[in-house]
Length: 252
Ligand code: 6PG
Image (cartoon, rainbow, N blue to C red; front, top):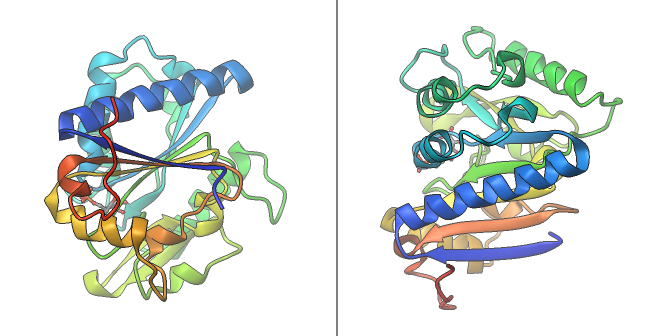
């Protein structure tokens, strides 16, 4: 179970992304002070784009030179593809901050062999974190989104990747999209010091309620993210919180 579980309800999407940016900065400063580096796994999709833009616009003074950015998942497309998470992060953040290229670890998803791309990414992580066989990396912060079907990263309901307990990164076949996606596995997600979900808008309200309050068998993938020795934070806006039975006060 997580060390702590915090659910923050922010009035508007703008408040949500501001709070998420502040949390990113807080965790980053703490990590750099304690370990002289800040390791982050970024989430993809559309929700985090606003966070990344905010970080680029308002946090230029942040110590990007000691920040190391990874991707919690990536679509099986080249980096210039409209679907690419790398492209979204590059447009919203990387192209706007001064971060050394060596601090950004991109999934080489242009490789037609998705399993080889996953294995290459796993090797990059094992090298960076100096992992022994069987060890998992401990990211200071892992950002995650919530899919309408309860998926997170690219761990989709019913997919083989849900069962992976030894590899760090897999090429997960996603039947609904008829494609592979490269994704972190649960052992990596659940080894984070802090895991922060962001969910915004009314379309996520049903799944937010299911994941935070539902007892589902099998559990939704997002429910299986339970950091074993870390903090779990949910940042949601009012619209995404609407179906929660337990009303929560607005966070500042
Ligand atoms: C991806 C993400 C995925 C995303 C959810 C929510 O590559 O798409 O990793 O897990 O977080 O699908 O996506 P939205 O933010 O677009 O709703």
